[in-house]
Image (cartoon, rainbow, N blue to C red):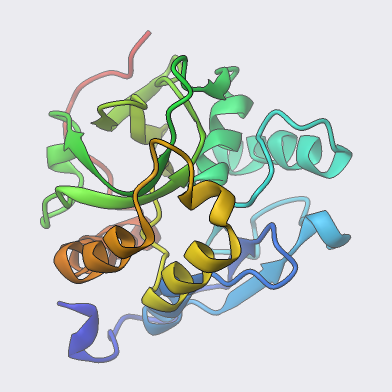
Length: 252
């Protein structure tokens, strides 16, 4: 079902914990689709003093979104977020990290997060390539290009499955255990968010390896339909804990 086809009809879920890193950040398309899938949102901003629950027993899962900070920053609240991610991994509850949220997952697993050795960034629409494991993730194939907004990345952590890789930053989608996922790209982004980010963060858009604002806008109309279709299918499986049936052990 395309997200433009109307509300999705699935049974009600417990709330999904939504962790945002900006004072006025939005969960974007992910938040809207989760509501349509029957999951209320429990939105928290630990950076601004909101506590995280000790357990996910009262939640259907957790989504950690992106932010302007680095996963390597020394702020106490950020260190607490990295430590907290051990909870869904231990409890085998659904976790989804987007951009910074994926990098925090990598840090929890002991993987280094760093800038590109040549100083490149991904800001705009870039190609990704699913691995053999990624082809099994959803009935809808991975989109050929996805929206990116990051200057740091990571390689696939030990014990994780690499689902999709990029040309300049290796790990674009990973799976950890049965229910935890990290996406370096932004399936949450909306047209409004793209318009706002490309105006308020000119330092990112003007980086030599970033795409121009017009390419961001054009990319939305060229690629977002396939991204939206994949995101709906992914969230259905994520909430329902439908596992990859690949029979392949994680990388050692």
